[in-house]
Amino acid sequence: MNPARPPPAVLQTPGFAHYSVAWSPFHNSRIALASAANFGLVGNGRLHMVSLISGVGGSSAVKLDKQYETQDGIYDVAWSEIHENQLVTGSGDGTLKMWDVLLNDFPIRSWHEHSREVFSVDWSNIKKDTFASSSWDGNVKLWTPEMPRSVTTLHAHLSCVYQALFSPHQPDILATCSTDGTMKIFDLRSPAYATGPATNSFTHPLSAAVLTVPASGTELLTLDWNKYRPFVLATAGVDKMVKVWDCRMIQSANPSAQAIGGVCEVQLPGHEYAVRKVQWSPHRSDILATASYDMTCRIWSSNPSSGGSNLLQVHDPHTEFAAGCSWSLHDEGLIASCGWDGKLFVFRA
Image 1 (cartoon, rainbow, N blue to C red):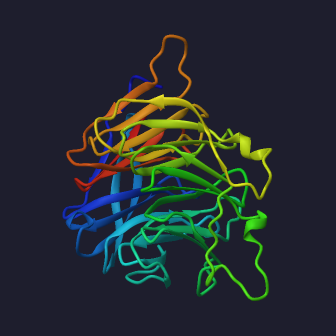
Image 2: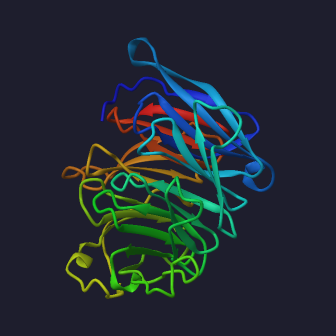
């Protein structure tokens, strides 16, 4: 980590609290922001398209390019992995919308199957025609952009599913986290998902996880897959603790088994309130970032040098809940944070 860091670039969007931020996988200068009026409790949403502009001496600025309005708050956003100008959002009214940044005003597609708020969306970086949504209705749904309805429904939990993420290593593996304090890993190839001629996953949701990890005694708000170590994940939530889990035992398990386990490798205390977002670095196997309701974004090492601290950096200019953080996929160490103060920061870790 470079101690001589330039000041962060900042953008404010008055009246709209940010819930999520995502860098484009195609362009290092493109950032998407998901936001909601009135802190997401009631009112409309807004998708902000933002550009990062490099300046002299390592400094940078961010500017708002365009915005899209929705009838309900937007809680998450994910860029397409196959089309550089498209992205998908999840809203409080249970809808998913696809947008094209070259077009104005309206989404190019919309889906409405979830009965409660859609709190996360994730686009598979391996099976690039597929994305996932998770909802407070307990379901995870898989979609392809050209299909008018979901292609698979997982009844993943009996309560809110805060996040569902595809494995970056295997296309048919998906992890979820929930109000019930568990992280679950689903294998879409497992015999539990075999369907006969009279059944389908739309009318008979699938629910058998290959591994359930009792990660917390309280709500689990976020998870992420390590990009270099298959079946190693990080979780965090209301208990303020960031945990790193080794779940490699499912690689040797019976595909139809429904195991309970997971080995907690590392615990990272330090946040003062719930941790809303965790994300592993796309460039380093031991570095991760978190955003918390304590108004900070923190950078951690899961494997510090002898005598070194796990906590590497505290980014604290937010004046309300820090809700999201996202590493640049192209520029190592560059990260964005967003929060309920309506501010986006782009800074270097």
